Length: 40
Picture 1 (cartoon, one colour):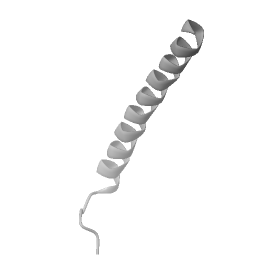
Picture 2 (cartoon, helix red, strand yellow; picture 1 turned 90 degrees about the horizontal axis):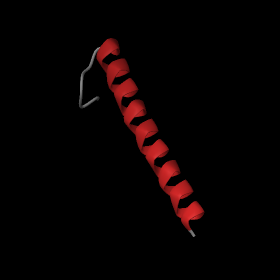
Picture 3 (cartoon, rainbow, N blue to C red; picture 1 turned 90 degrees about the vertical axis):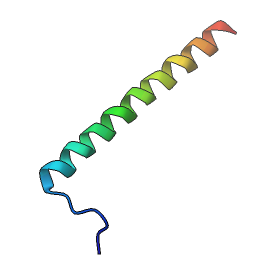
């Protein structure tokens, strides 16, 4: 039994928001890695 009852549109919006946040974090991590390897 699902804990959260969401419509399909709300779930899709939430999924896009989570994906967007993860992509921003991945880009930040990549930039940090580049800065760390170039600075050494």
